[in-house]
Length: 302
Ligand SMILES: Nc1ncnc2c1ncn2[C@@H]1O[C@H](COP(=O)(O)OP(=O)(O)OP(=O)(O)O)[C@@H](O)[C@H]1O
Image (tube, rainbow, N blue to C red):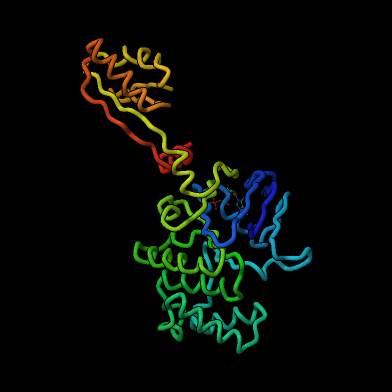
């Protein structure tokens, strides 16, 4: 079941389209990565979903809200550059945020203690935020976004500014929080997405180019390539290779023939038979797989 359904979502800034007609759904209980290079439109999309920015066009429908209900009751948001009152302690800050979210003082206190424990900074509860490390601030930011038990937690680049240890810890925390809420987080690092997400929304130039379960996308984009090295005049073999129906394309790159195949078994047999019969000066014949990462890099590099 979808937590949120987005249809034809658009946003322009002074006539410049930042988000160009998005259609997607977020499935309950999943961790979804909104993946894309700088300027893809990730922040703009998250800000529209969180109610901070008005779409130019399109609809965002949360499954558990009524027409006139404030969607902020159902979502938690951690911006890319959160601002904290550095003179407050972590606990004071969470109680303050809890009361802003309409919890009573007692409820806010109870929830603050619970969350400080959950995000792993209970030992720094009474320390001023100004003394927190980047990772601790990010944990506190996640706790503030979770204060009212939202059905959707949105995190804008939650690990980008962290060192490898902080990054690992926050990713682990997100993995744990998955039990309680659906999580949508933006990143430009495929590795982060691959590590913890179930589903992927791949965004580029304001559009979603790919979406779905990451495992399915990995399989979909895993294509087979053969790398062949022929000692003399490799360019003269291109047309010969392209003539096989099992071969989709062939090009010469840095002295290697890169052959895209549609039927690996057939291609292997056909090429090796021809090489034997026609005495090709074959040096190397190797299988290479392209991955989601290569697909992503291709998209990112335009
Ligand atoms: N308030 C604004 N006014 C004008 N243009 C904007 C505004 N906010 C975003 N943009 C433009 O919209 C496009 C998408 O920006 P956005 O911040 O959503 O991308 P992003 O994918 O989050 O990038 P990053 O990873 O760098 O944060 C960019 O071209 C950006 O310059």
